[in-house]
Image 1: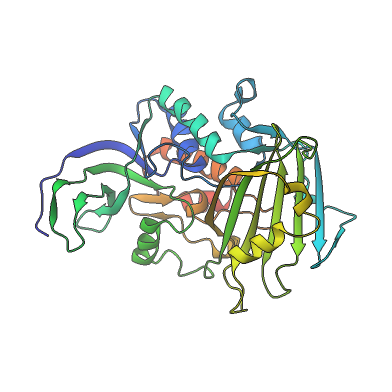
Image 2 (image 1 turned 60 degrees about the horizontal axis):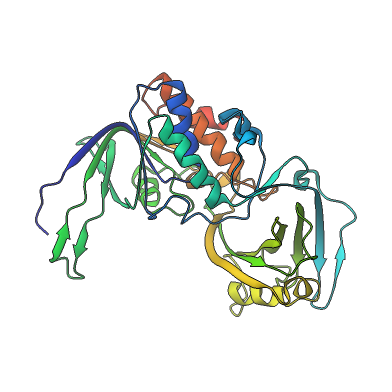
Length: 368
């Protein structure tokens, strides 16, 4: 394809991804220095539409970012009240007499992460952040020395053979002094940059899982708002990383899901089938009987742990949140880490619009 003339937008910083990390970053940077121009691009048509998570969040990072957030909380925000862990067999299960310290959730909140991001976005815009949903970054831009200088939005109206259809529109180029990657797990730009700059040469290979989630409306009397249940064991065998969650919301709704490690060895194991089997377990099925699925989805989860964390800085760019692999695997939580890393990146760039030194700063922080 021949080169085409493209419109160019100039910013001090562009963040790729309007998830909790990207939005927390943008909000914090504008809080620290309102003069810095910040743009956030998001591939989904509306903020939060591509966000999928349980999710139970620790409120500390949100308290630091928006101290008055409890006065007008996100649309779904249920205080955690109790925790249970069950070890399942095919026909029954045993409730664990103890809950590991890292799994205690009193003081935390069950939220819809998509709704929380949609709630964060206008607060970022009120500070002067420009947010563009429907802008899918196709590639990073580089100068002659290889430094990242921004991103290119994907062209529209391109045929399979690369030719231009009648409605062809060239994607714009967004130039920035710093590009912040907040794409989530397995972001395609991040994968290319990790390879280009050798960011993973000193870390273990990343591990991934798939999480399948559904939101259910169930008959009255079955939900205990704030109750959090995790299960281990069946239908996964002892060689397969797997487990489930059941989060009791308000309005007679339950968020539930099953996570399967993608390094499973059984060639006949299928994560979707495991999820369906789990929903039909004698301890789960009565809760759902007569209910209705309101929404469903699946997503990749980074489960390699700290030893798989790549270097998170490179010339002109840095990585935050799930893009960097910041999931606390023992706690099965990553949202608070995403927000912390975004805020830390903002504090770093507010001092100097230079990614250098961010990797060491992140590793020495409470985000780790």
